[in-house]
Length: 355
Image 1 (tube, rainbow, N blue to C red):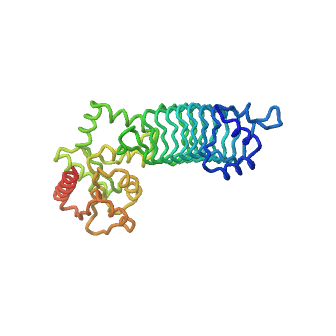
Image 2 (cartoon, helix red, strand yellow):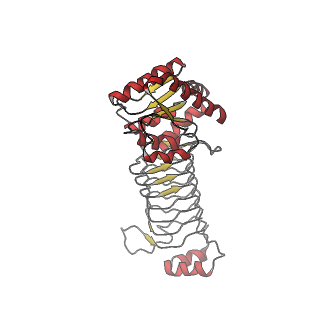
Image 3 (cartoon, rainbow, N blue to C red):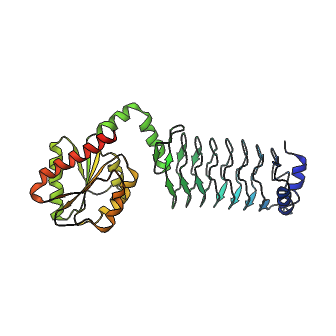
């Protein structure tokens, strides 16, 4: 139960409360089990929601509290414990939840607008129809959450764990997602976004599907380049030569699926490839394609090739710092069989070295 003395100070308003916190830095306030609507509501309005502005609620014991139907603006909850709490229908604007622990709490239909959940623990929370609009979830534990129609519009989700989540009808417009961990114990397996997490986790943990993927990724070679008539004939020849080495070359010269744009389709194909051949001659789309592939697939060697009459485009210098981008090979139309032999030898040697 909440400490009655702490509760009494809190009801005197943010100025008194924050001064008391400043003068008593060693005290960890105990506000556990309170209902903000009933126990500390000082609002005069009968029908208006209770509002709490600029409260320092950091490092507090707020286990089992009810913040239901309350408004919190620019409050600091960093480092506080909210285990088994009820935040349903609450509204939080620019609040700081950094390092807080909200495990097994109800946050359905709550709105967290431009809030900071860095290093927070939200595992086992139910977050149906919850809004995290413009919020930051960096190194956040989202494992085993129920995310149904959860709104992450313009949110940042980075280096966060989503092991065991149930995710349906997420809203991710304008969100920035990176390094999403799909394992509860292994931090080496990441995916670019939450939508892929459940699918990739299934693939990783299903031995039969893994065997299929191993078979595919030991054969597929993705070929990228310019599809003008002159350049396309070269790429077709490379494709034919690679088939002689028992590979399954994929030349991306078809329409992308209706559900994916060109860049997303190239990323999907690259993820299935043993290695990538990138023709830098007369570049058009290939700078964008390499920008997408190279940083995200360190296990897939990229073999640049270029016609002997041309030079690398200026920005290609950036990719040379990645060890899996191999030194380019020059070619002419007369030595394409030798070119493919060099490509195979170079990529297989790199793969063997890394293995």
